[in-house]
Length: 463
Image (cartoon, rainbow, N blue to C red; front, side, top):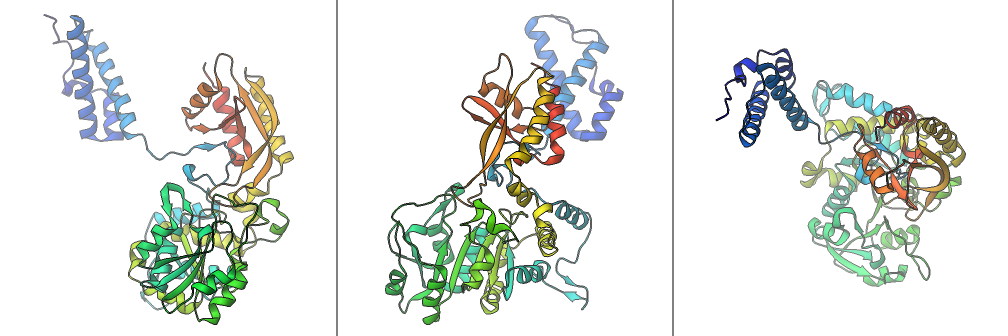
């Protein structure tokens, strides 16, 4: 029988400098469990091979190394930063909008200690978390009041529940959309307690269709942004101003679910990808009573659902019991307030990453891509620039794309699929896309400070 007595004991292993470092990093119990598992694994392998154990120091090093690897895997964060080289600006799978530096700084400042989240410093008594974004939202949009919840589906849900629970809400059949994750407008409405009343057809709905459906049981009219699809051809949809004029004749509110969170900036009217995107300011100007939109799409802030509009209706939302279940946390409030402050100061076009990415031109991206390509060619890469298109994503500006310059990569002996997979295994991972059997990087969505990091990661490539 093999002699396993030369395998060090757990107590002996714990005297090693490397193991003590593991305990300081990962804790006593986790390290102890990893050592036992590694020692047991070594014994099992030796027994299966009918071999003697290596000498004590060699066995100890084997166990320590295996325990360290196991601990690193166990404690590796599940949520990790990645480099988005897909060209999808608002990438839902990659966390949507990256935050502005000002928002990150505010989150860090608020998160590391206590804050006045629900405390009125002037009065010395309980306050409301809604106060931290409301003033900016009203000033930027022209709304009378505002409220913040955890996401836009929650915003639509609580708005319907507060305004129209138990009553009919009229919606065009062409707007009964399903967004990511199988979340459908009819389902949201059902959960709110409102009853769906469909009007019109999939491709054509007129203001007269809404008028014919209004009755004693009507609680509101709802308009929904088409999100990630577009109907073209033989279509018709009433202007929002027509819809609000009709609703107000019957003393009914109009809820406009915009989804994208587009706050118009100076010069946006000239941006071709945003020419048809509804702006929050325009919806309110057209008479919408409540407007719901996202904080982490075109607004470029944290995940949040924002409701702006008439003070009386917003107050109903604030008093609704659902609001507590859907309220935003302190980190969201901090990031949102800081993001809105960038808009209020007129800096958002350059300081909010989503807005900055949308404004980049193909030649600007090409300059960065060529610089990176030249570096990679010197390091054994096949690197060429090709024309391409970026996507806005996140259900915003459906069907619209932006011209860009793509960096097409190749590595001898690797297929496009294999190369794309290897990029995802880097630290941090690089998420790219494949076009025409080539891996391409779109630097529109690679943060400017990450160009150098991409060069370092790919420069250190080991085939």
